Structures are given as C-alpha cells and as structure tokens.
Image (cartoon, rainbow, N blue to C red; front, side, top):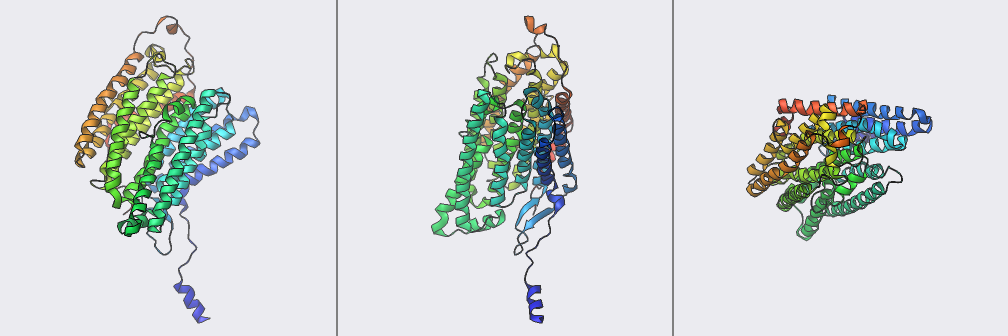
Amino acid sequence: MTALTALAAETPSLVQSVDWTAIAPVVITAVVGLAVLVADLFTAERHKPVLGWISVAGLAAATAALIPLRAGDRSTFCLTADPEACSYVADHFTVVVQFLVLAGALLTALLSVTAVRDTRMPAGEYWFLLLSSAAGAALLPASRDLATLIVALEVASLPAFALVGMRRGDRLSSEAALKFFLSSVTATAVSLMGVSFVYAATGSMHLTQVADGLEDVPGQLDTLAMAGVALTLVGFAFKTAAVPFHFWVPDTYVGAPLPIAGYLSVVGKAVGFTGLVLVTVIAFPAYSQIWGPALAVLAALTMTLGNAAALRQSPVRPHSAVRLLAWSSVGQAGYLLVPIAAAAYTERDQIGSTLAYALMYAAVNLGAFAVAALVARTKPLHRISDYRGLYAERPLAALSLAFFLLCLAGLPPGIIGLFAKVTVFRSAVDAGLGWLAVLMAVNVVIALYYYLRWTAVLFRAPEGAEGAQARTKAPWPVAAAIVATAVTAVVLSGAPQLVLRVASGSLFAQ
C-alpha cells in the first residue's frame, strides 16, 4: 500500500484545472450562439428581432470579459510533462486580437439587426452562424498548437460561407458563397498538408516545441520541414487575401450582405493575419530565411495590385463602392504583411506594428461599411456616384465617411491612419527592407487618388431628382454603429498613443 501511494505521488496528474477566466470570451460567444439557435425554435416570427439583441448583448459581454485578462499572463490546457507548452495562452497578443475580433463582431451585429429584418434572412441561423464564426475567430489568437489553430480557423471560416450566401434567391450571393467556399477549402487543405509535414518533421503540435524541433531537423527531413513551412504559409495567405490568393475577395464582398462584407474585411482578415503571425514568429523562426523574403514579396504584390485595381473602379458602375472597399482591403493587407516580413530580419515584436495598423483599419473600415449600409437603403446599386450630394442629405454620415476615407489614406485630420502607416514604414526600414518601404510609399500616394476622389463626391451638389429625394430616417442601430466608429476614429486621431503603444510593447508571453 505504501509503495502504491509513493508511485501515485510521483506520477504527474493528468487531470487539469481549467482557467475559465482565460477562456471566458470564447465560451460566452459560443454559448450565446447555441442559446440563440435553440431559442429560435420556440420564438414566434414577430419576436425574432429579440434574437439579434441577445446576440448583441452576448458579444458585448464577451468583449467585457477581456478586462480581467489585461495583464496577459494566463494560460490553460498545458502539457503535464511540459507546463510551458500550452494549447491556450491569453497573453497581450491574444487580448488585443480578441478585442479587435469581438468588437468588430459587435459592430457587425448592430448593422445586422436591421439587415436581417429588411431582407427577411432566417434570424436564428444568421445569428448562430455569426456568433459561431466570432467564437472561432476569438479562439484563434489564443491557440498555441497546430491542431487548435486549424480547428479555430475552420470554426471561424465555415459559418462565413453560409453567411455570405444567406440571401436566398440572389444569384450574386450564391456565386459569392461558392467562390468563398472553394477558396477557403483549398486554403484549409493546403494548410493541413503543411501542418502534417511539420508534425512529421518535428514530432510535436505545440508551437513552442515545433520551434525547438525545427532548430535541429535531421538532414533527411529538412526538405519535408521546408515544404511544410511553405504550404502552411500558403494556406494562411489565402485567408489574408494576399496576391495571388486574392481572387475571391471582390465578388465575395459584392455578393455578401453588407454587414458580412464588413465583417470579412476586418474579422476575416484578422483571422488570417493572426494565424500567419503565430506560425511564423512562434513556430517557424528557424526558417525565417524562407518565410521572410516570401512575405516581403507577397506584401509588395498585394499592396500594388490592390491599389491598382481600386484605382480602376468606375464611379458609375454598379457595386463600385463595395468593389473599391474590397480592392482597398487587398491593398491594406499588403501594408499589414510588411511588419510580419520585417520580423524575419529583426525581432518578433515588430509584429506589434501589424496589430496597431489592424486596430486602426478595423475601426475606420467598419465605419465605411456602416455608412455604405445606410446609403444602400435608398440606393441599392452601391455605386460611388450614389454618394454624390450625401453631405446635403445626411451631413453627419458624409462627414463620418470622409473622415474614415482620410484615415485609410493617411491624411490629416485622420492622424491615426498617418501614424499607423509610419509605424509600418519604420518596421520595414529597421529591418533593412528599404525597397519595400519605397514601394509602400509609392502605393500610399496611389491610394490617395481614389480615396480623395470618393471624398470629393460626398460634397458635390446633388444632381436633378437625386437631390429632391425624401430623406428617410436612419435606423438607430446603423446610426449607432456609425457614431461608435466615428468617435473611435476621432479619439484615436487625437490620442494615437492609445493604439501605437501596441507597436512598441512586448506582446507574447515570455
């Protein structure tokens, strides 16, 4: 009996306690999503809008659950043999990305309350899918093993297919959902193959252990490891809409409901960039000589092609406003890739510039989609020319959109956009990527033209009958989303240090 007791004392316990505070943002989002789906079965049609407000409240609660995690020192689901290898880590990187994801989903939910009612989309399914996708997106930045990373990526992506095609009987919506589905399935298949190669070469799934394993790969497995790294990066490049893996973006944004297009432009991109950051700077630093130059080239191609395509959008073409925002998001993805590429040449904290830029971009891009959702209520063709005279009809909406566009362009008074671009530019210079910094500067100048052209349209006198149209009252959820994003952009422009401190701080648990 004494021997058994001694053996039990020496054997590490396989039963772990779960840090519920650390995982609360993800759990709250997922539980509310399931609750909404079940409640939909027992809710009369006239009471379906209540499901939307339950979802909004759930996302607000999940965002508030980040407050106890500000210290960035929590982890759970760790290996008993190696407590440093954990599957879920709530460090500063996780908290910042989860805030971006959940706040972006909350604004999307506000915009969706009216859209779901007006387009008669199935409410229960819509809110369940949105919350499920948000839960997966919130899980991904905390994932510290390859299996959890892929699962989180799919939980974030799969519901988005259905959300894009939610408008029944709409050819554009069905086509967009199909293209998005095919591209995402391809990305997942490539990522899974890459992950399997990495696991075969290292014998581990945890990112920190993968990093250690790649430092000393046997010669006969070196080619396999390099192929795994390359394939994993290609899979995440699809998610970030990096050129040449961007082809699904414009048609998907046009066919999706506007709130979902905004969601994909911000939260969808955050998912891809988060996964890219985790696998490069944590798992694959030993192969930085491979992914560093590759990401630098991808950044150059992405920003150049995205801005060139946005420049070509005709103001009178149907859906030109959404297409311009779509191609603009591709160009912005190029800027977001720059600090990640720079991390290969300097240190991993360079990616703080990516997060700082992403926070600015999330606020102003969702704001632009919120104004587009408001304008689309009376002008559903989504043309840039439809915004002519918006200042005369809706002064506050026009001023807000103008400010958002100036932030994206990096022009005063959109100071936060200017400062965010400077941090990205500086990361390229510090890494010795002078050629990439010069190319970024050229692309910023190119982007000025189409952002300012749209801004000028807002203040032109309306033409003929367009100026005589009766003004409809803006739904208050849409107005609230516009006000929230506009106030955020103004505050950040007045105090850019609120975001820029992310670029200089230590984000990962040591």
